[in-house]
Amino acid sequence: MARARRWRARAEEEAKGHNCELDHVSAEGMSLLKHTTDVAIRRKDEMKGSTELLKQDFVRNVIELHEKYMSFVTNCFQDSTLFRKALKESFEVFCNKDVGCSSAELFAAYCESILKKGGSDEDVETALDKAVKVLTYLSNKDLFAEFHRKKFMIRFLFERNINVAHERIIFSKITQFFGGGGGACFKNGGNAPIYYNGK
Image (cartoon, rainbow, N blue to C red; front, side):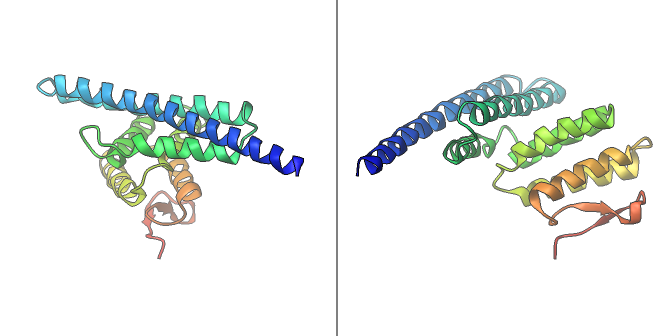
């Protein structure tokens, strides 16, 4: 009986901590979102490029926020399922809000910026891995896949120096986290994309 009371008290404490984390992370994420939206509204008459950079900064800040709190969950809360759930729920709140465009389009543009920037395979893979982990919180993953597919085709058709190895990295990450649907692959290790829809 005493053991049951201790377990119940511990569960209640964890639930309080869960709610506290949920509120705190959501508030921090919404603050980032509000700042980005406010600045974008003020800059709407300026060049489009400055607004695009602002949106890229928003995604970068969200990824940094995710790394920070995932580290807390892993190291301070012993990777507790309850706290992982709280983190997921928090990020779902603000990762699915529009910032002048849909979050799916925003994340597709961010992934494209990583691919266009280039760098070593290791650097690109690390950056894409961080981005795709946050992508799992998007409610409309199919829309992200569609935006990504269109951006990929434009790169594939019109850019001379497309890095096929880096393109393979993003497609493998998308497949790893989202399954087969909505992506593309390279047939038999070739350079031509073969699309599939998971059916």
